[in-house]
View 1: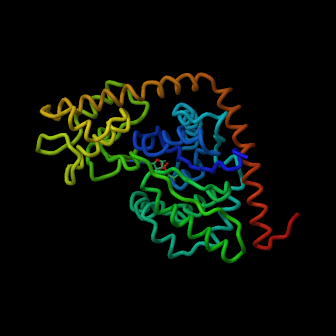
View 2: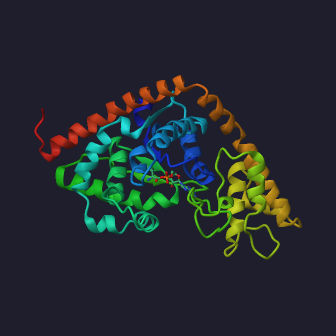
Length: 332
Ligand code: TYM
């Protein structure tokens, strides 16, 4: 009985590189926490990453190392379905049906499309444009109630809801309408320019913490973080750099903003930045250690992602069959 009441969550991350502190605090860390109370499925969104040209041999290795990172961040394949998107064909299959139920105008309004099209002006491909229909398929296949993501993915979630509502309206109740779940840390900013989100593609490598960075490098990057010209460690409008550092410090130590302000009263920004750097380096130490262990045990990783694909396939297939039937495709 208790089992049946558990809500379903699904989320994913692109294997475009080592996860950033933003990915970790905004999303992946919450996935590990949420798997205790929900039926959860988490995936490496490799098909999404193909919207940008990848070097094949390098990409293949990166997919595996990102899968290892997912587990290193605490996603437990005994508690969650941990899988690789391309291993479950239903994602591409549902994506086509949903693309036929998504409007050109809706896709044109997506800010991620506009940003990526500007970043990769020589490769504005159809996949980049229809990316949100594939993401809707990822979510709707599992009938997810909640989707834990960072703030930058909320627009895609809104579109997923619109697509699902429209489909349900035309063909009868088919999909659960999902909700975005964002936690503290849902928008971690660049250390070099705190008005921009922290991202692997930050032109300044000091702006971005990668979760496998060595402790010394982490501390150094925090020491260089851009702040402001007053001296007070407090969370206030207009103090983007300090607000970001406080958000990060609070997320890794559990201290409230008021406690942080009290602890650093009368101290300079130098002390605060060093404390944030050390706390983050310490917090990420076990992740790095688990990652190294997992990468030394590739057989275990293969076993886990194969099991994940089988579990995911069973759920996804059920939804896809239902959809094919609803839209009038002839069963084989
Ligand atoms: P991706 O790979 O860009 O990022 C993975 C997750 O990390 C969050 N994130 C951040 N959170 C806080 N601060 C930041 N600076 C920051 N940078 C990234 C993202 O919001 C995301 O939650 N389209 C998705 C992947 C995806 C997906 C899905 C997500 C594919 N299918 C289905 C949810 C459900 C993406 O590109 O995330």
